[in-house]
Amino acid sequence: MKTKKTTSIIRGRIEIRNIIVVDCISSGTNYIEVIINRGYKPVVLELQPGGADSEEYNKKMQSNYDRIKYDFNLIYEKDTYEETLEMVRELDPLLIVAGNERGVILTTKLSNDLNLLGTPIENLDAMTLKDKMHERLKDAGLRYIRGKVVTSIEEGIEFYESESLNEVIIKPVYSFCSVGVRTCLNKEELINSLEELFKRHNAYGDELTELLIQERINGEEYIVNTTSCEGVPRLISMWKYEKIKTSEGAVVYDTIRSMNNLNLGEVEMIEYAYDVARAIGIEYGPIHGEYMIDENGPVLIEVNCRPAGLSMTTEFLDQIFGQHDTDSILDSYLNPQRF
Image (cartoon, rainbow, N blue to C red; front, side):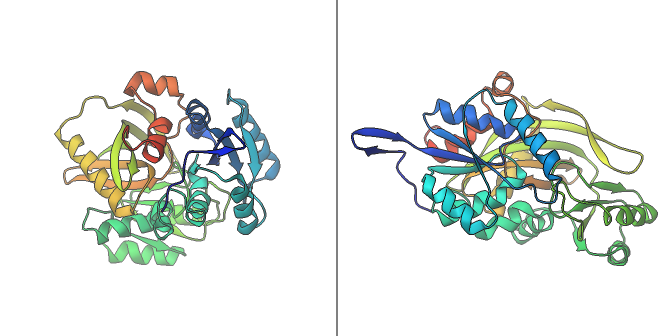
């Protein structure tokens, strides 16, 4: 895709260009500070609540915005994509980025239709759907996790038995964090979890009509955050974390710590993470990737194509890594030499 000039002259003055952040929540709010510091105007594009309760959604978004210490313009997603596209087109943005997972789809569509820097639209499924990203890895000859999307308990049992599986993970095809994720140690737990989850919603409030069943990989779990420029990925930050299983089989984070010194296996995982970014087809921007290392080496759990979450401030991240995600991500779009 073509790049546009960063400034233009209008009647003898310099116009400050807009950078739009779609679904600006969690650590994605750090974009506002970074955009202002780079001399651009931040515009937040708030998504419609989807399947969530609108009143609760509005309270949540306002609470999120109250934490932002900088001024920004706020616009709202329209009822149709075409209306939203025209609204954004009128703002003539320099760049559009996703502040959180739910913003990835709209960000990618708008960037492609407005000929802005981003990842080609044909890679969107692999960026957002948990089964499609592993299909990309398989096609690229990289290690992936066996799995199948099922729409019923009967399909789930059939896959479980046909693959001679023992322990499995069940998760929504499209969601984020650990919402709707279940660890099943046997067939009975599989059936109970499927019965429960098919009655639930994903993190966005959508009914769960499809679930991904994957072979469970046992190993050490990591977060590897990368960003890409012209298809070339580089490391931003890396964390090691521990999860625990609740009584109902749900998975929650227990501890997380930064990785500032790497052993040989962890270096191999970073190279694998770069291969994952290329296989997914990321041209510009971030991957917040979850990975595991076992006796067979590194393997992807899933990618999320937005900044790392946990609402960590830029100052906090700078103290740990000497950089922070949103600044490094904008470098990959706006400052290739510094990238």
